Length: 514
Ligand SMILES: CC(=O)N[C@H]1[C@@H](OP(=O)(O)OP(=O)(O)OC[C@H]2O[C@@H](n3ccc(=O)[nH]c3=O)[C@H](O)[C@@H]2O)O[C@H](CO)[C@@H](O)[C@@H]1O[C@H](C)C(=O)N[C@@H](C)C(=O)N[C@H](CCC(=O)O)C(=O)O
Ligand SMILES: Nc1ncnc2c1ncn2[C@@H]1O[C@H](COP(=O)(O)OP(=O)(O)OP(=O)(O)O)[C@@H](O)[C@H]1O
Image (cartoon, rainbow, N blue to C red; front, side, top):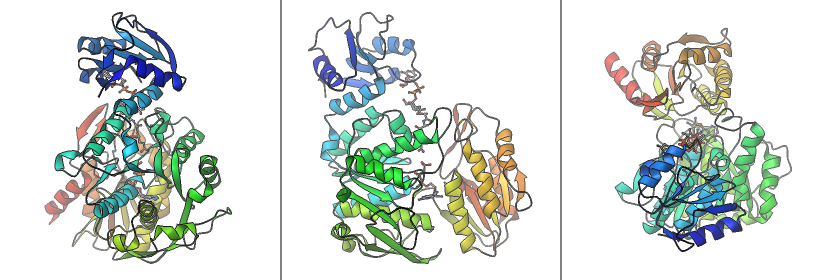
């Protein structure tokens, strides 16, 4: 893979990003053979992007390692011998040049992209499982949990971000194509749009699941309007749009889809009896008459003429309980239908699939059922607790939860409200405190809990909090270890401090109590 300066500047000019080229002593035919944004990974003949909280010292390191060209929003006098391409927006330039460098791998993949405040990972896992099964293992997955670029074990690895940096994204897409993948299921975070990680990328199918206030604050979105705007960009960049008609802000979201997509290529779905306060044409509905912890069944019905071509009508059993997972599953079935899957191929595929850290449970003899779940904002905590309350009307709901430091500040209030609505006992503890004091975060959550309804305990050490929850629970109770899912670390003052995972701790505690 290689690009000439002339090709790079042409792309940047086309997108009105180029300001000037400096120190171009080797001329327009000079070639770069690698693209990097981290000086620690640079090698000879790399093109280096100066982005984010960048320091000029990094560029010096890149130069020492052999990088010959940089792209930045300003010229750096520190490296007079390097060719500099000065642009108006470096993250946009990085996405466009990344796609070109890896020779536009997106053109060889059928890309299904999910966005939403909640349900992205679950829906992506469902869809990937279907496409993988029906294609003979030719489906890639880029999720919050892991990235799968091929069918061999070494082509599967843990993700660092929900949506990777553009250079990593196009690199991994190229790998997927080279590994023989035909389709890609990916999660697209609003942050990816805010940071231009997917700038210029188009999807075959874009799916909007839902939106509730989250990810607003320092380092994230300045306002809810900006969060919504970023999320809606997925639809603006998709050939076919799928929208959960039960989402908040449906009108704006539907209008965003219509701005660039013919309504014939927009599919809306909802639970059959759900009331929608907007006259939108519904394409697919699902019935959930059988919805409990033993069996979750949905019946999917195509209700519009265009939906009939999906061939997804029928009954499906789901492995993951919770009404929100029925909605997630319906979105996955529509996506799979758009990729060519039919009911005959898919009807028994969702009966076994599990998503790590989502609704995982252990049934204990003396201490009730213990759930580990990634619910970590108001909407997901409320959905999870209300479902579990409906399933265990006689037991107490004992919830262990904390809220992260430095981000998602609104979650603290959200947890307080969801706990007040559904929990019997809340054990407030630590979850990724970052640079904040976990005790102070606990106090904020506590200030939103109604103490007449919920008994609150504050145990800052997460291990002890889990131990306490399981120890006090009786056979009819439910213990919920919320918000960390299968995270193997706690983020403390910039360091990922190893954490055995909630599930491992729960098992260890149970063993000790036996
Ligand atoms: C706010 C944000 O998104 N920041 C991301 C961004 O940071 P940044 O560009 O400022 O990078 P930085 O780490 O400060 O360093 C600046 C630059 O210097 C480079 N560098 C650094 C050190 C060095 O020695 N040499 C060097 O060249 C770095 O590679 C980087 O290019 O680029 C980094 C990778 O280059 C990301 O790791 C980082 O994500 C941070 C860790 C993060 O927490 N992001 C979250 C908010 C996020 O993106 N979340 C969404 C999901 C949200 C959801 O659930 O919906 C996601 O998609 O994951
Ligand atoms: N459609 C949904 N609506 C509300 N809550 C949901 C929905 N789907 C899943 N959840 C809850 O949210 C948690 C996280 O689900 P999932 O990982 O699928 O979402 P996500 O969008 O990928 O989340 P994140 O952006 O935080 O990584 C689950 O453990 C569950 O409690």
